[in-house]
Length: 156
Image 1 (cartoon, rainbow, N blue to C red):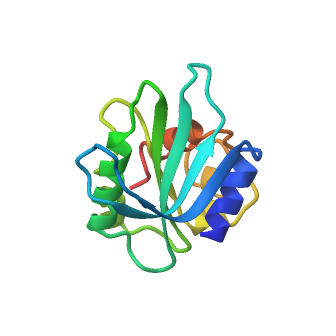
Image 2 (tube, rainbow, N blue to C red; image 1 turned 120 degrees about the vertical axis):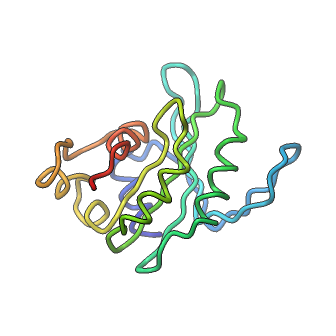
């Protein structure tokens, strides 16, 4: 998790606050309380919506379907007119093709919101420094939206 937060700090130029080991429980929404490894809140965008990311971090262990479903449900409850929600799945090892498909299930049908970060993106200074050598993507990103768009079509 520390590596993910360090990369987010570098990518978002410190325009964020975060908290770790959160249990998110609804006041009114019909969603079960969910654990998340971190919650990250960025600076409001041009539309005055606050970017908010919830994240799940693993080492070599796979991202489980239950992890994806819980974070998807939580992200779906935030009011889109005020909050631009993102879901970050990060690992210090590569994602399997099955995990990529599993994580895609959390994607919003109207906009990119899922961010996948593996060791390839977490270790270099610029998030996509290594990725751009293999795929058509810029080496750097400056927002959660940039990260989600770069993840939109993960490599097969």
